Length: 299
Image (cartoon, one colour):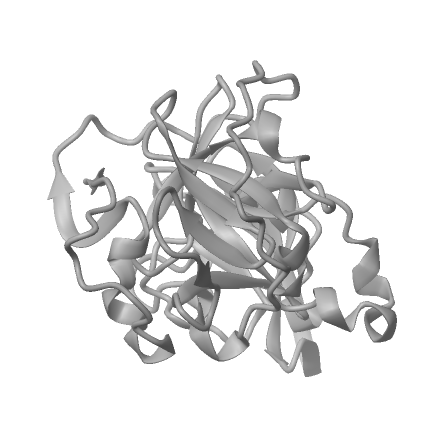
């Protein structure tokens, strides 16, 4: 099931709903909670195109607002709910060097980097331009500007210990990708327009992100948490994996990941007497979504 894209409707109640309305702000995006249509099954995630076809840049919003520092109280962290689909990757700043000196770049941490972003949003791949993520504002065409976290509740991921990013739900070979920015709202953007603002952006797949992490865990409490001897679901179970384990990635083979499991562990560290074993886990679903996540504080 994929969410149906619905153009913004000015008749809906939407002005200044406030940060307490996170769960009903699906109107802000092009996909509304609870409305879906049957489509073809989701294909495995495509690689981010290195040289996408360029598309024309739409006119900037006029008048251009001053940059707004997003209000963190109005931004939900999707990683806190293990049942939510986090997509196949995320949209983040291309250069993360500012994270190494947080004391000098406090205004860019969390969602602060959105103050320098200029990203056009669309209703569908190749469809009409819908609006902008512009310097801390969501600006639907022809509608009042919405300050992120103040006038419009957003949803992001704590993908680094001190940085929030947007889930990417789909990537296409022609450069179009679908980005989620409220609990039920998403829009399309194009990779050729990721460098329009002061801070260039990039789309990073979860495979690329996870390979550098040292502490993975299974997101969902239910389902298979099995370490296997081979990258396939067969009678090859080595052991079951609990949350009191450290999983470090060693290699990828499609939807399977070879890991080193150390247990018992707590607070990112193995406990006294911990032992390690290696094997394979299913890290990605058939729909291309991540079944495992990582602890940014352990990076």
